[in-house]
Image (cartoon, rainbow, N blue to C red; front, side, top):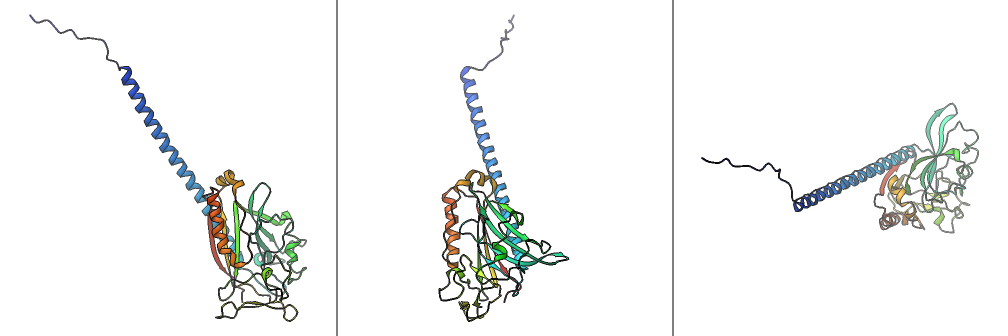
Length: 306
């Protein structure tokens, strides 16, 4: 007679070595998962930052282009680049533009004063600001009170520092350059760097002034634009044919982290320095570990140009 086999009822268990191996494998899996999620999160944030700077930059440059394309000129109106901005904290070596355009419809007319410039305060906050005075603002609307001057723009100089006339368009715009081009697509030389023999000297820091004394470019003749002597010629009252605009923007997260590292803009001696300044500044941003900056450029044809 066979005896039955007695089976053990004691449950099986993991050995200490098996537990240590399992915990090690589990820890490695958790570390890999955390690393993967961290990479996904960084990629998401980077994508959001790039989308933010792209959307802001495109919207800004489209707004400026639209308003510039509606600029008008006459012996009573004025288009200026880089006039003196009293009390405005303008970023050194950046461009500014001011003009008149038909942007509003009011009982007083539709011709508004408008302009754009970058400010920089002591905490390195960078802002692109829009100067705007509608024709209904009897106190600050000065274009007809202060006639176009061949060496200054008093309607800007006397009023741009008034805070109520300036609106913040965007934070994080760290650079703005503008080049005025003539009918031959040649850069127009700056008044401030013109020869001492012409009557517009002493107009620094003005770079272009529609009320200056100059001979417009002759179509088909390169570099034929020429400043003339104020004593012998009348004010031109002409707009540039084309404007070339360049903006550099930095997203808000990067700006919070790297505000103190934003480099100064390169010193410019003339319009010919701007292309190199754009390249140099962007290289400086990368050197200072600001890698999410975006550069936006466009060309605007002025409808009322000659």
